[in-house]
Length: 97
Image 1 (spheres, rainbow, N blue to C red):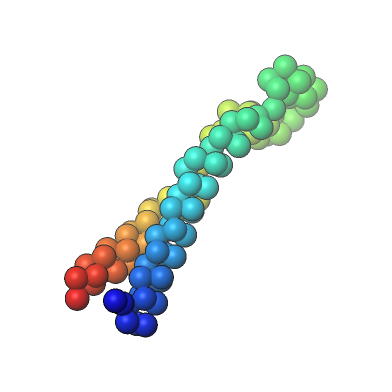
Image 2 (cartoon, rainbow, N blue to C red):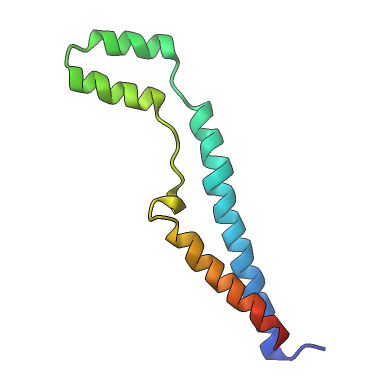
């Protein structure tokens, strides 16, 4: 039988793990799929680019057409994953105590 402290600790561990998995699902699965499905139609987009005479505007429009999703959690050099890994590892090591 678990004590109240052990039960609350287990609840916290599962909540942290669930939150981390949800963030990873959103950042690495949901957003790239959404990004790929919502790309503009190339024929319509090329007509807009050809109608614009400013080269800098054309370059920015081409970036929109050819750009890829960059995971938000990797923008800081992966520090988010290192921090969450430390939290989850520390809580897993503490399970034996």
